[in-house]
Image (cartoon, rainbow, N blue to C red; front, side, top):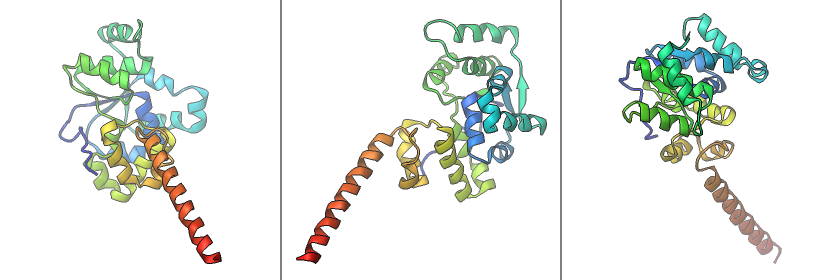
Length: 224
């Protein structure tokens, strides 16, 4: 796979958005992933609050974060007054972000931390505030060389597949083909969140139709 993690050689603390935590939980090895990298991991208290609703409690996302905090892997932080002012700007108006994204960006911008966000609008707003620097993606965590070394290639690939399949992880569109190659086409067809899922499905349907026609011709020859 040619995808290269943007977190290599970036020692800054990382501020994780809600969807990133969801992906880490979905990948089944989130604690091992965060334990393998040296960066401090920070989560806004508003983000932590977004995982207190009934669905997150039922599916284990809330307890996943609680365990990370209790074991010292993640620190939950509140916003300063200046950060809250930026949060109010980002979460209000016609192009508003959701509260978790807004809090993540506000903290990263004011403290010169690295935001980890997958949603397109949030990434664009973050880059505009950080002199064009793009936030990291969830997949930057999962493909970090330290994670691959710690988990081994096979298990590291499995974390990506599970995050896509169960967390509906978003990835850079220009890395979609590389990700399909990495996890395999059959498993990619189970991941509807992939940017190229529609074309993959069309190719699979066309191939199935071609094989069906070939099998029909073969059966006809056998009966002649």
